[in-house]
Image (cartoon, rainbow, N blue to C red; front, side, top):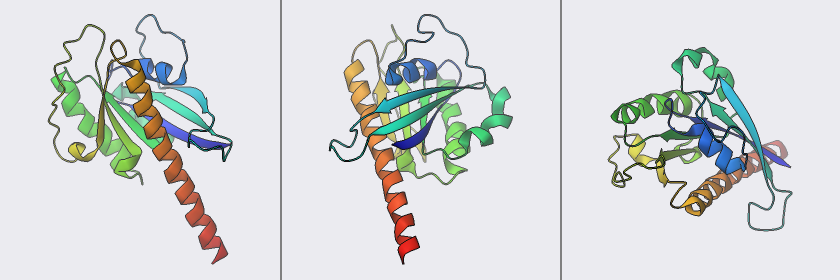
Length: 186
């Protein structure tokens, strides 16, 4: 079975744990807010994610990383061998819009990840205004795939967007593996 490690990063209280629980279908700590200390790893198995019956599916490790910068010294260890990064932020907080540039710089640009391995999630909390559909992000964030997440109004749309992203990660892993195999053969 294919394994993929995906980091969920972003500012504090942006909804990383809520989305990690939602995507992995976990109900752990769903009721109240409690800041993640360092990292929390959720395993999520998805059979036949490619849409064909070839292959045995994929096991995703979702690394729900604390948004507290006091854990910055741990970040290099968290990044090791990751296949993708999901940057989650609250689009209604101007401070989050500034902060996500730092998260992108640290977790995507400083390791050998392509922009296609990064997903930007504007997470709308329950009861939020939600009138931030036309976010204007500065370069280089404006070239990343951006989705809006509202688990109250459209949970299935959110789930489908995550599945599309996970499919793209699997394709990147498979292509990399094939290139490696071809280089050994030739």
